[in-house]
Image (tube, rainbow, N blue to C red; front, side, top):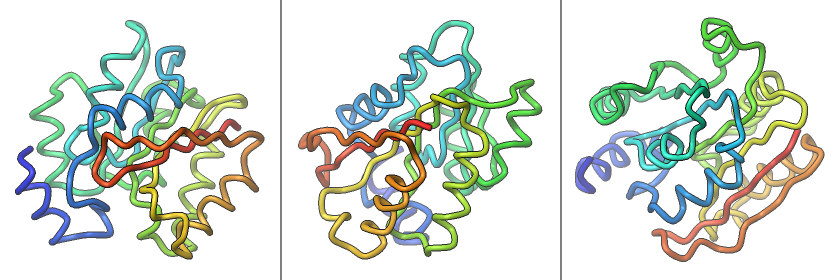
Length: 191
């Protein structure tokens, strides 16, 4: 997807897109590493957008791993299905992940990779999504997401980080990924 089309998606629906540009390869690789995707048997991606992180997930997946993505924006679903015809992309809210895991024959997943724009979400939606993650992630499983370096100073960003620390047994932050616009920090949370 071109940068201009991505920017148009941001202008049309900033709370669903979350950024003016797709994630860089450096950020995508950092999120995938933090999520331990290469060791996972079942991986779910929340909010793949145009697939910037999806490519790194696909590169890292074990040959026998199950992987699908949850994307609420129909335009991004179309793009994802064109770019990654072998990846199952559900046009639905990430809060409905449980039903798609069951359809895939899985009781839980090992890894969740998220590109969702957490700081754009209201408190209730953050809670609903985090509850879903805790419901579908196996004990010891890893949830990985990122925030732009300026996000933790915003009230929604602080609230999100505090919720991660309160709900997960271990939360780890990466060094700043400078090779992204804007620079970002990856959060890895283990259930």
